[in-house]
Image: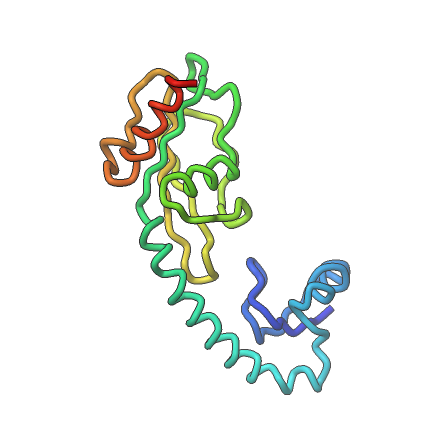
Length: 175
């Protein structure tokens, strides 16, 4: 099935592109969500108009999100976790955990679907990407360390990590 994209679709294309997709994907997802229309001759005549409008919208959205991208770019987030002797975690660090940590540290609301990562199951440093828009994808560093050790992200990024960690300690002592 050929469709004309009305909106940017992650891992498929940008608005105004004509793409061939599986029938079920087009019929059950793209068309009902309003992300695409069938690529009929009349729809193809509007493709350039759709592309021009999408470029304007994309530029405005990128300008809004550039401040968020600067805050997130290069941020280091530390997680204390229980791990075996070989460095494998007894649980895992998921995109939901990272999104919660970003909100706590930077005050920025990120959906877990915007975070491109597999669950982290080992100690060490891991680089992840956050998809803010199709063009803005800042990198974050996630540091997983054993429980009881000092948080290495405090040394790496004192302005980001020092404040929330210091606030969290008194509340745990009182409880």
